[in-house]
View (tube, rainbow over the protein chains, first blue to last red):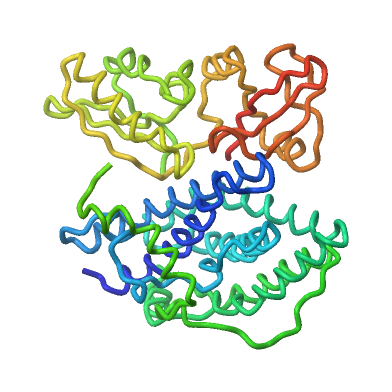
Length: 250
Length: 165
């Protein structure tokens, strides 16, 4: 089994899995029917992409492991998503800020991944790009609408951006698996995406009349499996059925 | 990569009877999700491609294809492929007509789709009364492939099948 490729795929897919689960938690709880449907639709797209990645990872593992095992049966320290996506749904501004800060990265990442020498990863990226562009449109709209909205919506959006800013730099950290995969022409060099990322993010924040945070202190650790306290609770819910009824199938 | 389909003529009438469970008037053939269907050593090998990654209809479509082929005396093997990625251009003219008759506005071309969803242009034709005095209500709709619209002439709400390219 190609261990680096396996780890690399998990590094991509875990972000979508955890963010998809966060959005799924909002089913029936969003401020309006339209935003409720939007968040669950985005969640569904992300889960669909995750299935493609995990099916591929299971094939590479080459043992009894299935896509469900990979999604549901790892321990907290074995998940390698970035800290940004596991942050809880505090309010709608926060949910949209988290989405936007991830969507900008996600689209830039997939645009590079579709050039991968690994044809399966390239195909998943090519398929996902169309969906993720639409997610970015939606979250960008809300950054502008709340940022350039009422006094209260602006304060909430500014607070959300300020709180989540500290998790953005981690998106551009390379893992050992990343480095090997980049060398082999399979992986994306995330370090080069950083410039375009902040340019895009800052442009939208400016248009939304929001302040660009100045803090240079950034959190990291998710990619090494060192998570914030929030992930454990999320996994408890995500894994409940598989833990309570081992080996259950749909 | 090829965008061509490879479907055995004998299998076409069987596959045309299978429909999308979420849009029952639309055959999977008119939807363009069947990319390959060939008979190899008495086994039908079918390749289907999802409209959206998370489309929950794909598993059902796979099962329905198997059942339809079984009834016609064939065993089948279904494979889900991702490349080339599905586009709304693959919906046949007959499929577009079926969508309209069912009350779903068919996808516009990519540019018009953008003006409609991003700039609020009034270009989507109401499937009920034919007016283009329509507006976007929600970017996301009842399924991943649709957005929600309303006609300002006849007041009917309706689904618009988003352009995917």
